[in-house]
View 1 (spheres, rainbow, N blue to C red):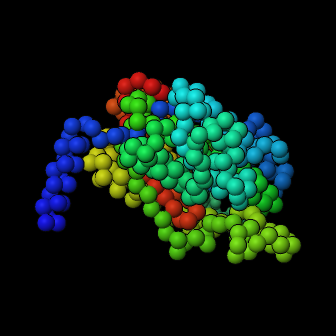
View 2 (view 1 turned 180 degrees about the horizontal axis):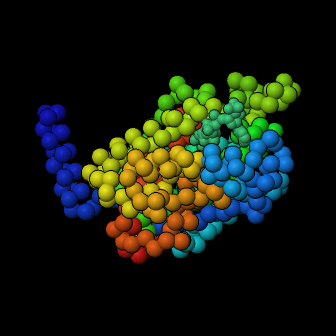
Length: 352
Ligand code: UT7
């Protein structure tokens, strides 16, 4: 009986997919927001013992953007979301659910998504946050893809926004040169235009959590005079360990994603990786065998903006380059958790 049932399921799914009836998810609108204030390497030279030469040669970074004191993750996310809605030709009232991915929420609770839902006037939308550090956008996108493909929702707004300057110790040269603030957002829908989200592969390894973390402020070490005195509310990172894993994990995720999509490396026209370090990006590009001009980088201008790094780069790529229908992009991310992911997007006719 169960064999018959499984056979029937296989036949049904074959007929369903073959007939083109299976719902697919598309990015139909995108937008990003970068705060105005620029922090240059020269500014950092005046704050800690560092040099423009060290920062450029070790990271590729020259500048990063910092939010105003009175500008928060929800404000930047809102600005990016408005642009994404405009680009998708959607009203806030058409959004069914808002997913915000961030490791610097306005509050531990309520969610930043709920704050943006209110500010956007999207009263009918459900709203929640997802935390997967620098890989957050791909985790959020995977949920949106699932909602659309299952038919549960029609339009999903995915927002990645970070005010990393609020958790960076500007006395620690090992981390303060790396991070910046910014946001990006996209509308995911079943309307066949923009970019098809062809495949997404995700992974994590919590054994390595201690290499990149915010030690205090959670329930293990609630905020206290001691935690503040010890600087435990700042990002703590073992850069070398993170670097090693970043390249290997993203490379493997890319391979897994290609395999799942039955595609070859040569079919990837654009590589859009997380913007943590130009050396990591170059190592990936080399292993991928992709031409330099096909690898999109924003790391020099914005540094590492965690969850929003990848979608900010994606938004700029879409705006600045001519992406032809049928061309494929590989998105890659890696960060705290450790958590990582890869996704393949295919440009369709029309839209973005
Ligand atoms: O987004 C999440 C994922 N994050 C990442 O992927 C980050 C991955 N890691 C990295 O990008 C790199 O490890 C860093 C850029 C963070 C560091 O580069 P590194 O080549 O691994 O340098 P290091 O940490 O081994 O430090 C080398 C030296 C040390 O001095 P000694 O011990 O050799 O005398 C550091 O103290 O460079 C020193 N150093 C600095 N010198 C000038 C560290 N930071 C600085 C600085 N300016 N800002």
